[in-house]
Image: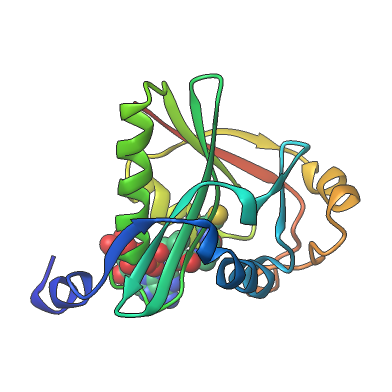
Length: 168
Ligand SMILES: CC(C)(COP(=O)(O)OP(=O)(O)OC[C@H]1O[C@@H](n2cnc3c(N)ncnc32)[C@H](O)[C@@H]1OP(=O)(O)O)[C@@H](O)C(=O)NCCC(=O)NCCS
């Protein structure tokens, strides 16, 4: 890490989400995911009710990650950095990974969509591998969450779910 990124990274702290965070978490989810609901592999999550971690710079939230642990697996449901690309996303991911290990999870995994090349880069750089392409899974997701747009990043049609994991 160079000096600038180190300075930015040191300027925030990460804490578990509490019920008091819910109003701003809901705003973030609406802004970035068009709903507080998330869908992955046909399962609907009320993301604002999930456990997670937030990154804070002073009194201002600058990132949030939510997860769901079941069957000894930890699934990341949402993950957003709200202030640039200065290490916030990496710190939030590291926090969930540590917790998943402590809870004895066999893997940490997530679904992203085929348009989100930046996320695929980010997670691969941090030890995740591709597990599966769930072809045309977004059609079913749209049935469960009508807010999913037709096109996503760089104007790419959103059609497929990409499953990524890191074994622990
Ligand atoms: C994925 C995400 C949470 C990562 O958070 P972040 O704070 O940007 O992460 P970091 O700063 O730790 O690392 C980002 C990396 O991308 C690079 N980067 C630079 N510009 C970037 C940009 N415009 N967009 C994304 N990444 C960028 C950073 O330099 C860093 O590179 P590295 O892998 O060589 O270290 C964040 O990009 C985000 O909120 N994305 C939108 C929501 C999303 O797609 N979530 C994941 C699917 S659930």
